[in-house]
Amino acid sequence: MANDAVAGNAIRVATARPGDGDDPVRAVLAAYTQDLITSLDDALATFLDAEVDSLAGIDAAMGDFAASARAAVMAGGKRIRPTFAYWGWRGAIGGNEPLAPVLPALAALELLHTFALVHDDVMDSSATRRGRPTVHVALAAQHVAAGHRGDPDRFGEAAAVLVGDLCMVWADRLLAHATVSPARLFEVRRCYDQMRVETIAGQYLDVLGENDAANWSVDRALRVARYKTASYTVQRPLLFGARLAGVPADAPLVSAYTRYGLAVGEAFQLRDDLLGVYGDPAATGKPAGDDLRSGKPTVLLMLARQLATRSQLRALERADAGPADRLAELVADTGAAARVERMIAERVGDALAALDAAPVDRTARTALTGLATAATNRRA
Image (tube, rainbow, N blue to C red; front, side):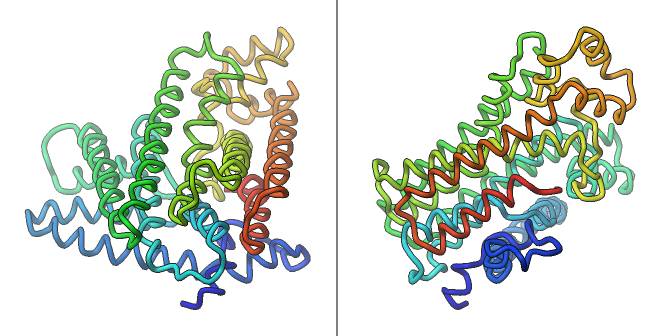
């Protein structure tokens, strides 16, 4: 693949919309995206085919199990985390270095993402993901179809946890395939490990918030967004890419990536909060309103409670008893949705300001500018 083709390929799959040709940034992104995504998918497919074949050699049932894990990885997705890692690397190293040596490391982030999604769906009892049955639901259906004994739902959840665990191990194994120096790979691994720790911390706080909503606040909800989403979606992938390029931890570029990544990552989660309530299920692949019905303490819901009148607050406290569309309307009436939109815009502005002063490759600057808007102003 030509390096200059990859160097402009960012996120067309996630951002293409009617009229993009009138927007110079989106036009640049649309001209470049697909080669990177295709390379990532090819690398994942080649790696996973070998892993599935290896596990099938243990037992035929293991082959079926591993194939379920493979399907979870390859079932669509925007490849956002590897894309940010790619631009973190390309922004530091410039446009002439070949992609192949670092491609396995970038693809490993998608395996890590699948681990997080599968476990998150089990914890949230989610029925769909990307418009398809979640892994635990699909595995429960396989249990029924095979005529096995026992509780199919319990089997599906247990097997899905193992699918997630397997994806985590696969991520480690694929990361080791990157052909960079051992010293550099050690630094990459340190960043990767910190990303995993922060993801688990954010996920635990998310679980805790659902069970301790009375002691939650907007600040704590933002902390969840920072560690559950911002860290492993944008900030750490950018720093991961910088480490792949050999950028030292105290470099100005690292500071710029850190500021940009935190701002865009938080805005990404805030957009998710809005899509979870107001998004079109046909676009998001998930039903709308689940967070409201469960009383999940997102930034949106915490702000709604903070801004609500007494009567609105009483209605919010009975959230699980009302229809989702009425609850969504109630949250909007408090002004919370508009406030979240402003928070997203403020964070995108901060991210772009961080880029302005960053010593980053010109093409990467253009891509990261477009990504800041595209990843936070999306429909799915």
